[in-house]
Image (cartoon, rainbow, N blue to C red):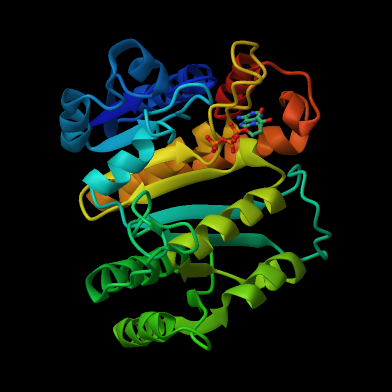
Length: 361
Ligand code: ATP
């Protein structure tokens, strides 16, 4: 009998609802065709527009429902003109990360034919790596509470053993899964600045300790500055990279740039119990309501959700559908016909969504 999964949907702001609609449609089609799983979608309010209307950016009932769901599908959130009284942006995605301890920010970087990459990739090389950004501490530890006086400003970088152990275990397990699916050689690189900061030497020592539990994998290190260089010069060498919050924040945008832009960059924030799947980009208010938004980053995030749920609950058909969905998106990108303006095409958001559905057969 098909197993049911409850998906909490947050449609978001700006282009958020426009890219969520084709995403849910594609997922509904996949689930309808599958004997192995069924998906139930429930949308909950949150975001900047909701805050402007009600004074609440993430209602307690939405948070509770998200916590009970099997996975959370979250579209772009936030609007430049809607802010809290202290001037900071409305970002329920960060609130969810904190509420559910989603310590692993997963940012795949894949460059296939059709990606508008600024790189020249030699024949026979394939860029397919995953950057894992710790998402609850590091240099974001004092986010919003840093001390600022007339002449001095301080923020604290915090690395804890507990979170680092979970993070590294997650990174090694992911490398193992990728290896099992023939997607990588089984290599995890700890990206740090251990030559300068004691906190990063501590980070690295925990990595080395965790690596011992995975003797079938390669574990190595790289300094963050060299990693930025190599991401441009030889990104095909990487498999799984794992790093601190701020380093990951910066490197993941570099990764999105290598893939040809934010419109094709998916992501997931994963904890021990919950996971949020969302595009890397923001709500793009400059193109909202015009049917110009590229839904691929959102749809690729949904593909990651299927893979994660399938692996977690041992529903192989679901993991396979996640991969099929990613391949369908890549096929449309490669053909270059039904792509939106950011990829040099003329298709609308819905036309791209329909082309992806058709490519799924
Ligand atoms: P945030 O700070 O919320 O992440 P941002 O300031 O980085 O947002 P985005 O909203 O991500 O900005 O948009 C940056 C640029 O990329 C804009 O010009 C926007 O139109 C474009 N963009 C973002 N997402 C998409 C998309 N899915 N399709 C097409 N263009 C997009």
